[in-house]
Amino acid sequence: MKNIKNILFALAFGSTISLSSCSDFMDISPSNEYEEEEVFSSAGLTQALVNRVYTYVKDGAKEHTTDGLTDDAYFTHNYGQIPVNEANISESDVQWYDNGNCPFRWSDRYKGIRYANLIIKNIGNVPHDDNYDLNQIKGEAHFLRAWMYTELMRGFGGVPLVSEVVADMNDVEAMKQPRNTIKECLEFILEDCKAAEANLPETVSTSDLGRVTKYAATALKARVLLHVASPLYADRTVNTLACNQYDGDRTELYRQAKAAADEVINCGLYELMDCRGGINTERATKWNKIITTNNNEQIWTRQFGMLSMDGIDRNHIPLQHGPNGYHNWSGTTPTQDLVMAFEFEDGTIGTGMTKPGDNQVGNPYNGREPRFYATVGTDGNEWGRPRPADAKGLDPTPLGRLQCGYYEVTDGDATIELSLPDGSKVSFKGMNGIDTRKGPIEDWNGSWTGYYERKLIDPTVDGQNYPQTVPWTFIRLAEMYIIAAEASVELNDLESAAKYLDALRGRIDLKSTKEALTAQGKSFNQADMREFTRHERRVEFAYEGFRYFDVRRWMIAPETNNKELTGVLVFARLKPGKTAYKPYIHNEDTWDYHYYIQSLKFRENRKWDNKMYFAPIKRDERNRNELLVQNPGME
Image (cartoon, rainbow, N blue to C red):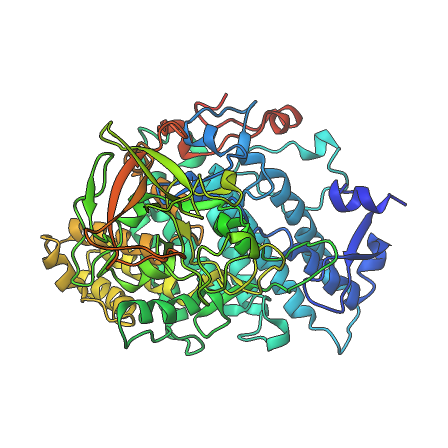
């Protein structure tokens, strides 16, 4: 019998399967080894195997995800993301694309697909057991296979569709299979979604949160239909590889995507959270609960526990994304570009503070729409728990405030020199903000952009010592409204598109779509509505794993991924006649706050190459299977 370590980490496709305990859903600690035929002699063991398949679906509650490969974020610690952003990628040097946090990592998704294939092939042989629903297990296997193929297709384009169980992954001849076309992949995924819908329940109990349901399959169908209907797959100038081109009726795909989204919207099982009432920051707190709590807007999530001996499959986002002043790592940090994408409450979008050298005195974040405050942490923001003991008493308030700037004070403990984006230098006696690259706590983990991601974080959790229980949301109802809106725009049904968008905007008391278009100097026509809908999708789903795929399928990546990476430098100078007393707390009555936009090109010199529309297939995979055609430019 194979060694369990090899099974768990190499996942050899032989006759032995390693299973997790079936006592708790998603408990992935191994409990035993079983021969393949034994697994399907027991409904309980088969259930445990489908639990294992769930672990091959990659969530975004990780230190580094696709967001750092977009204009929304900068990842502080590289891990192979800089070469992707600088387009220095090939089949022999795939960098982050072979990282375990990549949602379309080739080897991991095909391992999960192999397990799903095993279940689908053998589920008919499993003896009935009143304690288990074999139809549900079958539906879960079909859904999970569809999900993993969707991720592979979104990352690589057309991929080999393996539906039969390969006895041994090391059998080179058995593994030789060419890439299927986008159309074939779409049809395969839709068939799996149909099978999932037929076998999955409409709802699950609280104890089974995290299991997929019928309408999760319908929602996935809406997502993948919209994706393939997009311009990238119709293009024949940049997208030159035949297997990556869709040759069907894209208009019909938009119709089907809208119909599937409508089916989820109208099923009566989910509802948009009402975040109206109060000032913008109060509405932000309500809106943030969509992401940080279990609620009726979520369609499919991954649930996390608090503690484990090995830390496997726990949500460590407070530690990985939080500010260094709390001993956190500031992994994925917002860019200035994303900051300026959020509207003001009157529907306008700021036109300044967008390029290096732009500056202003006074808070540029006042009057923004609620989603901004729920997504981005800026200097002076309340964080939610007291500072650690070694914070030198700089901010002992019950709710700590982010200190992302540099403070000029006569009794400061350092001489600070700042190089401003205009080339000038400022030298003064002062204090380095505790959450900066010059702060007193683990400055190597400080944010380069001057911002922190807060959307995915419960700021009351001590990220240094405890993981949070915030779920990861794979699918929520708002996406169905955005899908229906985008499809409606492409079908030139603008009134319907506005209706769907207004449902999302109205639940946070924003201006209607038509009012916002007017405020931005745009018209109610297809081109402006297309841009408006895409913008709405960006700010609604920031850090939920959408942007990487969206800029590619819309073919706007030459614009978004060629932008110079920028952040903010905050310099607080005492107002005339004012005195600052320790501890120094963000106070606009005491200081004039100067905000300078600075280039981060020295960290990442971002550039786009059209070869980056599709990820490279690793050379090792092509050596095993010479029938795999490489994506153009990645040889």
